Image 1 (tube, helix red, strand yellow):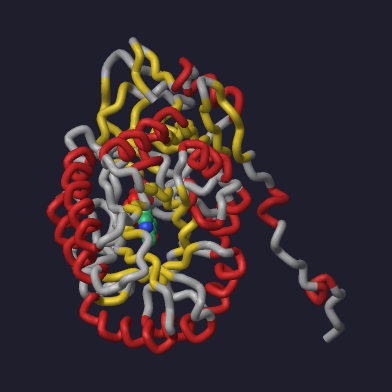
Image 2 (spheres, helix red, strand yellow):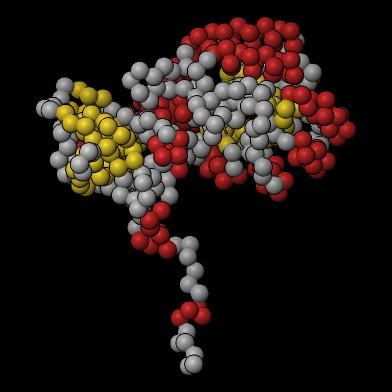
Length: 418
Ligand SMILES: *Cc1c(COP(=O)(O)O)cnc(C)c1O
């Protein structure tokens, strides 16, 4: 969404007001053109024939978005068997889907074998069980390079105490298990966490991975995960994807020469591809002035967009109903009966009740984390594709809230006399 003159517009000149009129509020809007830009930026940053960008669909899992990713040429990174099924439903070939679970049962991993997708194992115990059960099924191994990175402790997953990956200190154990079961290791993987800014962190991790990769002779690919940072605030710096591409490409080529075979380089970005493609539209229900603060209370809350409360994430907010005139300072809050503050002391053009506010960067980890807390409906989703808007998830209704509840018959019986 961009400010064009004095009005906000999506791709194709569609305004937020038009969408709200058509689909009501609160509403998630995704622009395919932004996803495409990010995808091409990433693809062009790496000048390698064998490059595969696997979209991490936990960021935004609407099947239509997955289909669009497939159209762009992406593969899919999945973390649950349900995401695997969504990917298959969206038309991905099993070979284009990589399944990277953490702390799931061997039963679930067996289902992934049944579906025929690529499997990434991040635990010695599971590697051993898997090798015993499926010695002929090639797997990838997730290594923990113990590199501290990431925006905050909840999303930093590569450090020493992290539950993710097999420590690179444990490679002798990996070899013992692989040898004992005659397993084929087709890939080596790392994913150090979200919000990595420093390219040197990536390169350090990559060096550790190259060291380990040398010792496995059946490799087809190396997967460097994700963690690419996008700007949320105006002054935020983003991962310099072009510089990273240049450096990794050169180093990867050298490695492949040394290894004796050309491998595929894989990445699995979520946020980088979809964060900026999303905008969340809400309506201001009330303005509430206290002695010290002016609150703008909107028709949404932590049930729809929890990142500010869960991660202290900053989402830029604008008043799309009024783009000119004087500004005031607002604290934007939700309608949930719990403190759900979206933004403190934000300078917005003066808000009237009924105005529409827009949240930026609402593509990644927003709708996928939404819940029915307070028995509220989850928002609808709209995709803008080639300048036209399409409803891709309808708004929920009261029946949806009850759909999985089962009425217990004894509670409907007439109480016995006492
Ligand atoms: C979440 C996740 C990603 C995507 O991370 P982003 O920060 O959204 O790019 C990639 N790989 C794995 C294994 C993940 O769990």
